[in-house]
Length: 164
Image (cartoon, rainbow, N blue to C red; front, side, top):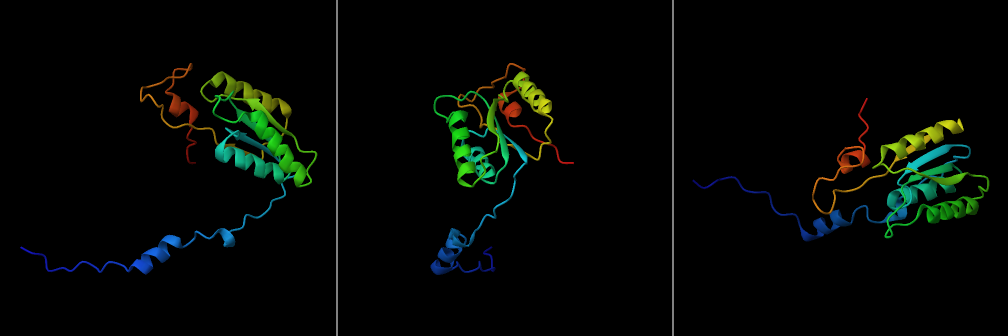
């Protein structure tokens, strides 16, 4: 039996184009400046990508920034480069006394994570912002890769913080 229901008409080309272009003009989007002078920020994986951009932004707001990074492979920016860029952003915004450093922290090696945490605790500073940014996609080989701690690498490097 043939259905007697009619399907809704297809939207016009103009309407589809209008919907596709909505929100693509960044002229109305503003990111407010924040005063983070004296605040302490830790960003894991802060030497590349979104973490790097966040670090530079936090530094320009006057925050003290600690990058928790591993020794990167050759195709990634070294954390030293990001530290220099963060300092330049802080100085350009008039924040010359901000602390900006990178500390070794390889999420695939829990001993370095513990050492990082102990080093942080020894500073005695309150942690104002934590950006758990370090992450990785599945391994290119498709094979199960375990860390030295015996965990599957993607699950160890990409921690999920449970909802409370």
